[in-house]
Length: 503
Image (tube, rainbow, N blue to C red; front, side, top):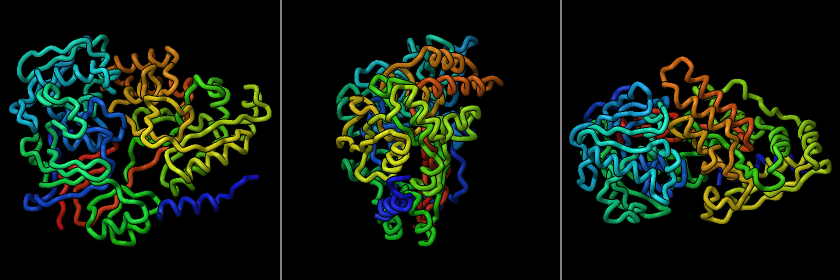
């Protein structure tokens, strides 16, 4: 029998929730330009893309920075600072051609030398969190002020995808040379907006960057990024004009619609996951992590913890994305008897005790997981992580309720999750077949008929050998005032080209 009823867990959740062209085409009339937009979203861990430690930082950083490429709504790489790129015949060199006349918001020219300096800093800085992604770059050659060539240690056709996010955001060399530490609070990029004021844990105000390469597509003059409202007041915050657009939990969907707000339910890369350190007992035995996965009723998690908005998942990508591997669906189906058998085989016939770390008190998802695991003999103690603790770096918690926000390149995602230096690989180890499969996919051109299968083979190699336990994909949900128009649904980084605010 369950020690806590579904109704009780649902009540806790209710309480928590209630308490491919180069430019972005727009359909808005030019006269709609101007005005301001306030977005309720998460402030970044730092305004320096090289040292950012949180995947979702990319959404805020893309306001202040531009990358060599960007993602379209489906996650494909399209031109941005670079108007185009070309590989050599062997796939181990790629030349990017920059647009003419680019500048950073601090007035520094954004040329090939600046691109070289920024990318090499990302690769080599001791505190860089993107170094592993740029490890394939052996050198960077400046061919002209607008042509820069990346020399690679192996064929790698993922580079345009890789450089469409934080890894490819170009930072002013002047800012790096004069006050690199200052980048944490004062971004120096060439994005659609320039920062005016930043108050940590509160807000950031920005204004339109008239020198942005695609400035004609930016139709608001002022942008405020504000910490998301408490779920209990999210709808009221938009109604009152405190926010124009804000992220809301699924429990607020109906309330937002009833209030006359527009609601965008956007399929994105985000998946809930249990981070697992496989160097710590009992997680060092794969039978234990398999038992955990079999003990979890993922559909119940979706229905209760996300009000039916999401899909059970056993891999780090959403259904219908090119990296989705059909053969991994139902990899570890909900089977309590099988979970008990695996625990017995692992030497725990009478069960095992573990500690599950979460980010907040009274986390309904963690409580429901605790209940499900206890039913097969896994005695779960819940603990709340120390505020501000970065477990990706300290790795002090071996079993953690987490989310993975995806990356621009599917192979980059695999390396973040499963690579020996991957931030979300708490054990910092991986069998060689994972990297071998990733390298095969990396050396396959994106337009090759065998590319998708190569990526899916790499996903299978990783998911079937590593302990990360994926739970369900979940959408990004925005509520917005009806005056906000032109908000595109991006599977990756949310962008604001073409957006207007009529009030």
